Image 1: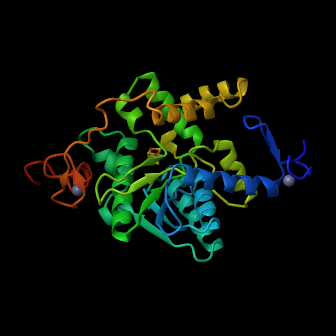
Image 2: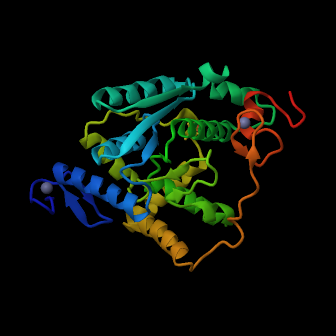
Length: 311
Ligand code: Q46
Ligand code: ZN
Ligand code: ZN
């Protein structure tokens, strides 16, 4: 198989794009596609400060690398969740630090949950009386800390490495259950609804997982291969496997499912009436972040064991 651009030996064949490319042209193509996505969905501009949430995995580190190469003002944020299984957090932090060492000028914020709040995420999950499952609690902690760091650092947006496979798995799950509220909010850009809640953007939303992995490998980015041990057996992995089978039989299915959904929303061919009305927000009495819950936000309730009537 030969590169469509130069005729040299191709390193990747993307059946869904009917495109085979050599290493040099693949890396160029990938970076160009991401820049197009950023501009197409008006995610941010060159002058905006961006915070990239990095986990040590291929997607987030590749995203940070691409944004730096494109000349965006992108800093990293690593949240150490304290996940011990398979030394997941230790290894992922090592990968992020190695990335920073190889990218002179890259600035990284590190938030260590146990140091800041006394307990790691698995410890918080074990003591959670409300039976919050670890991933729900982990998501809550990550969202709170991302918003906090973005607000304190004056960042315009938080960029996450969600790729097309992630987005399609979410879309598939939400469609299966017709969760119209989630469908209304699923988009490449989630605008800020409050000065303390950062805008969220997903510049990799049109890139297949296989493409982000190829980018990381060909660009020489060392990343953690293992998934978080708590991700094993999740429904999103089940959906991804099903969608991979579909893609195998019908290349391009994932991309067209996702892009057609976005297009239909944009053209108002489908709309989820009344789902976007945002509930009234007020500042949490403990941390100041906006919340709809009485007195304290969900994060402070877990961390400080606060209830509506105080401690
Ligand atoms: S890190 Fe956290 Fe994920 Fe691990 S505990 Fe679950 S939510 S699976 S993206
Ligand atoms: Zn080429
Ligand atoms: Zn709070």
